[in-house]
Structures are given as structure tokens and as C-alpha cells.
Image (tube, rainbow, N blue to C red; front, side):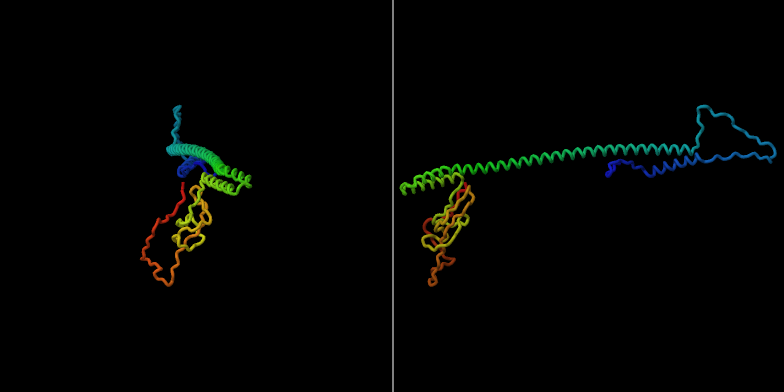
Length: 281
């Protein structure tokens, strides 16, 4: 099986099988080294003659002498152990080859994944650069549209300064025309003025109340004066209009009828002011 730490391969053998093989080898070695029994010496004191029958017939040529049964059993056991060891070695070699193939496949997959990540990072970097260029181009294009719309106003202002010695009434009329032209140019780029004239219902979304003013001509909670105009740009609030708001009338302390109760009903004549929402388009 493969060694995860050193990258080498070893063979794991069955302990019982290895012990049986070593025991059989030991027994064979002991049988080979066992001394032969000494031949009996002739007895000189024995009376008579000793007759010895010898089988001098030679063994048939080409036929080995019969081996002891114990050695045959040990030889068969050793051959079986050898065969099992060879099978286990073959399985270990196949497992080692499979492990090497799996390792090569994993290395190839890792290299392909690394190349894919590098490609994606490169594509993302180029996409970010392109996005930054597009944003910068849109910003410059927006500035160019605004300046292009204001160029006629700038030309007319310079022309008005060249004729500053003219009749004041004519000069004032020219300034009014330039101001109207400026408003038209700003409307082209999405700038619109917030409606905040006298009598409009106060709306905290587009109006900024600076103070309250006591008045009997306007309803409480309506705009009295516009102190600074407000503007929206492309439907978004750019600057709120500063206004003064009509205050609630102060009741007289000696006149209980002047203090309305919650059950009183009031009849309002004339049109009811409604809030004016700037054009979102």
C-alpha cells in the first residue's frame, strides 16, 4: 500500500502466513542437519556367525527414491504459502499502480483548477478596469451636456457686459431674458425649481420652515414667503426651499367662544390647497 508521508510503497503480509512459512523452513533445515544413526558394531564375544541380508538390487533408473511423507507435507505447505504470498504481492502492486494513477489525476485536476482561477481573476480585473472607464466616460459626458447647455447663457452675459452703457431699462430686459434662458438650460439637464409660492401647503419633504408668521390672509400651515428657492435634480431633492409658514391664530383669553373644541366643525370656503409634488420625470 502507498505510504502517505514518504511517497514509497510497502507490502503488508499476513502474520499467520509468514509465521507458518518460517516454521516450515525451520523444520526442513533441522531435518537436513539431523545426524544419521551410527551403525551397530559387530560383537566379537557373540558365538556363531551373523548373517546379514543386503538388498543389492539397484533402484530402477529414472525413478527418484520415495521421500518421507513429512517432507512432502512440508513441501506442499511451503508451495501454498509461496503461492499466497505471490498473490498478495500482485494485489499490492495493483493497488500501488491505482494509487499512483489517482495521484496523477488529482495533480492534473489541481493544475486545471489553478489555471481556471487565474483566468477568472484576470477576467475580473479587466472587467473592473472597463467598468471604471465607463463610469468616468459617463461622468465626463454628463459634465459636457451641462456645460454645453450653459454656453449660450455665458455668451449672452458677456454680451450684456459689453453693452453696460446702454439704457438701464433695456439692460434689465436683457438680464431677464438671460435668466429665463438659464432656467431653460438647467431644465435640460434635469434641474427643476421646487414650488414654494405663497399659499402652498407646507410640505416638509420639499420645504424647510425657518419661522412662523401670524397672518389672517392665509390658512395655518401654508407658505407665506419663499426665502430661498429649492431645486430637484432628475427627481431627487437637491436643496429644500426655505420658507416662512403661517402660524395658528392665538385665541383670546377673555373670549371662550374663540377657543374651538374637538366637536366643532368648520366650513372652509374656496379651493383647498393641496401639496405640490415635484415632477419625477
